[in-house]
Image: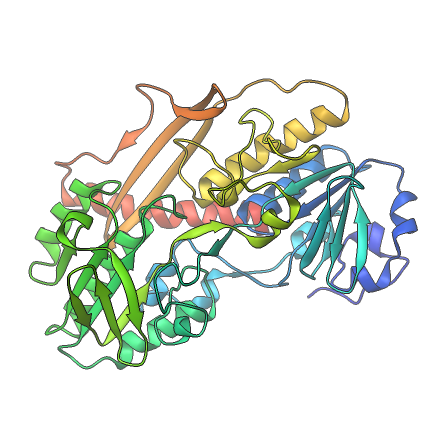
Length: 425
């Protein structure tokens, strides 16, 4: 448990649940090292803060994160399907505090690139030499007519793990046998592009084992998706008659919803369901707009070598909020980008130019508890974007036996335990 923070022990331990109240700004200057503020404590932000601090304990590293408890999105689809306890998704920041990262559990409300300051709730301001933004995503509310924050309490998105995950789980458990489940999937870019189809798969597993008269329809705003052939082959094998995928060309784009009747409307049709999971269109989190690092797309253009914003000086953007070309938005990508960004930040602080590097991403998907598939890629910076390294990476083989699929399922769990232990353990 994080101990009560005192003025004396904040810089020594970094365990600062009440840092903003306990430590005035002048105390940070006493540390003597450069000041790096990291906003966002997910897989990207927490990793970057740790790496920068461990590289040189003289660095003053401040992690600004709204919540002292983090719920991981990877593997949360298994919670929705009743295969996993939400407690396995829950982490805290004690390990970061133990290595000397100062923790501020308040939302960032203002960033001023000219004065190089971050203001948190309560109007307390932290200066920085370098700022790393890892804020994740926000939703484009009402892009689907009628879908706003209130509607999400009836039609959960469950795209940020925690209470929404449990809400969708409870709705599925309460559904009568014979009910219809609808998942609305947005167009790209989206956080973890394979996750909607993993979710559909695991809900189909729940239906098959618990509500065998029920059915699931995926209404998709796209005509294709990552690993489509592998997913659909598995659905034919494991869930015949349970999953129906309706593409954009087949009137799959949801344009409006009615939470009062649990109805979704496409351009040419209407569907009423027992459970509706609306995954909304997304953008970089609001603080990115406030900082001036998000462009007209809603995402943040970066230099792929340094992760520096193309719009504001001395600010780096990593993780889901960044425009990263061919590199998918995932926890693995966020972790890899964070490490490369930490190296770049340290180089910039020394007045050096970082060298280009290759990054790796791997995404595992469960189609059933004992059936997994994966996709991996290697990426390099080319003309301001991450592009695939030709011949590297790949997907699970289409003709793999069930023993290989079962092995991949164990790899998925091992990957989750490995990355969460590294970041939060």
